[in-house]
Length: 255
Image 1: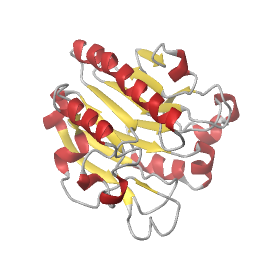
Image 2: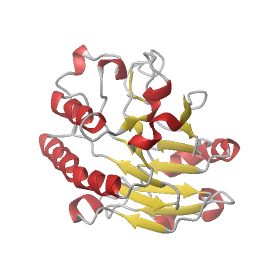
Image 3: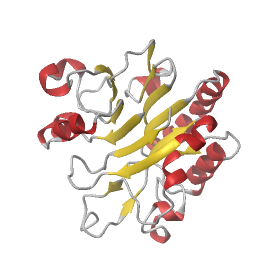
């Protein structure tokens, strides 16, 4: 099974840059999008729903903000919009589909870089996710949570780690939480199962020459249940074209 995740930084902008032409060539089973920045009614199906895919989107109440979606070749048996927590759900940050043999979620964890209140909200979101993870583990069904987690886990996951230790996305508390997910919770960073190289990033600031110099962060993940640990076949961060300030992350699973 081939699954792609991308923070599009505006799905309409990504479409204009050729993202869907690229996507249709990938023959992926699932595409998870974060930061759609568009309401469902604003998307022309002819442009935004490739033939052969089922499409589901969770919008933010605020127009032009956040939003997550999932494209799937397989029709889900169930679709979950949000987590049942209004403060989070009103920002359109979670959608999950049950494909029968596999559960896939698209997650957009908040950034805390704008102001202290948003970092506090990010910590609350992290805490609120833990019982969701417990519920997913209790189903005994394989799951993949794709998305922009807005946290670089280790020094290898960020170019300028020394200069970012006090910045949101690389704070000790955030990194420790990720370690908890991969330790205590037994979850899997699918990318690192097959690629342990340095310099593998998924996001680059638009400031300066970050893209040209590969001064990036790996903040987009496929985080999976433990049973998929040995099912990861390959992983690719696509950088030949730019559809967003993030790059698509494609992982193939033997499921």
